Length: 574
Image (cartoon, rainbow, N blue to C red):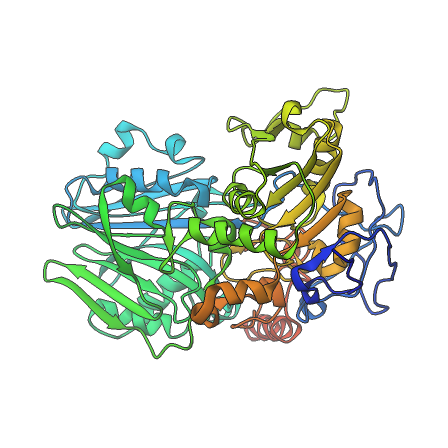
C-alpha cells in the first residue's frame, strides 16, 4: 500500500504508513517546558509536532529535561488508558455482601488499587474498605461483618498514592439518616462545586469528587430521598454512574450523557443487581435485563422497582473505549457485544491496511480478539507469539545490573518458534505514549522476526479523557505530537496502521452518534473546568497531595476565581 504523507494521524484514512521519511518540527513558541519525569536514555529522538488536541494548549504545560531539549516521557510499561473503577449494587438477597464481593472480582480489570463494600443491617450501614485487590481487602471474617440484604461495592484503579480514606463506597450521616455511595466516572466541575460548598461551611474529609455529591444531597431540601439525588445531580457536570444505599433503598443513577456503563439484572430469587458490566451479572447468576438509561434514576425498595427521569438528557455520548479496551470481551456494553466489536475492528484493519505476512499475533490480553478478526479476514494463521505472565505484582525488584525493557519482559515473553524468520503482524488495541510499543517491537525482532507490522484496533489517541478514565496528559500522548510515520519510526516497526475514525463510525452504524470520541478528536461533549490533566497528573479521585502539587493544572478563569475567593476570605477574617 502506498505511503501516506499526511502530517496528522487522525486525518489519514486507516492511518497506514510504511515510509521511512521523517519530519522534524519544533515546539510552539508559546509552549511552556515539559515537567520533569524520570529520565531514561531514548534510543530514538522524539520529533515534536504542534498539538492536534484543541484543548491541550489551554489546559496543559510543558517542561524540558534539565540536561537537554529532548522531552522525557514517563517509563510506563503498562502503557494503556485505564478505567478507574467498577461499581455494584444488590437489593433483596440475604448474601448481598458476598455476592457484591464476587461481582467486584468479575470487575477486577476495572481497578486493582482498592475496594470496598457497604451493607445495611438493622437499619445501620456497615462498611469495609481497604487498599489492594478484592481478594486482599476481603476475608471470610470481614464479610461476616457485612450482613444484610442490601449492599453496594466499588473498586478503584489509581495511578497516584492511594489513601484508604479515599476508597469507596463512602458513608455519611445527615439529618434524615445515613447514605452510602459508589461512583464510576469523573466530575469535571468538581473543584468549582467544592469551592462553593467550602465557602458555605462544608468540611471535606477526602480528595474525591464523589464527596461533593454527598454534600449536595445533605444540603438539599427536596423530599423524598431520590429527589435529593435528582437535585444534586442537576448541579453535576461530567460522567457518573452511581449506586446509593440507605436504610431501606438501593438507588442507581447514570449521567445524562451516559458516558460510563451501568446495567441492571435480576437473580432467580428476585434480587435486583446493578453493575458496571454484564460479566459481573454472569458470575453471580443474575440475568441481564437492560441498561440504566442515560439520565435515569432507578429506585429499588420494598415497593418494587421505580424508574424516574433524572433530567432531560441530550444525545448519549457513551465511551467508545469500553469496546476498544476497558470492558471484558464477554460483556455486553451499551447494548453491543464487546467481543463482536473487537473482532470487527480487526477485520476492518485487515481490509484497509493489508500487508504480506506469515503470522498474526496479539499483544495480550486486550489485542487478542481484534487479532483473531484480522487473521480470519486476511487468511493468515493466528498464533500466540507473546505469552503474558499473570503473576507479576504491582512492584518488583530489578537486579543491580540493569536489564533492558525489564518491565515489559516481566509481563510478555516472545515465542521464538512462532516468530523466528517470519513476517509478523502484531495487533494491539491502542498506542498511548508509544514507549511500550517500541519495547514490544524490539522484543519480537530480538526473537528473530524478519518483519514486524503493527496494527492498532483504534484511531490515534490525541486527547486526555476527563470522564473517569486514567489517561496521560495530551503532551504525553504520542499521536497528539507525531504523525503516524513518526510514530512508526519511533517504535521501530516496518509498518504501522490505525483503525480510522471514519471506519469506526461506519461500523457503529446508526449508533455512531451515541458515542464519545473525545480522545480521538479533542472535541469534548462536556468541557472540563477547574483542575484538568497535565503531565504526570491523574484524576483527583484517591490522590492525596498538597495544593502546591496541583498548581498549574487549572483552567485560568476558574483558578483566578478561586484565588480571589480565598483572598477575600482571608481579608474578611483578619
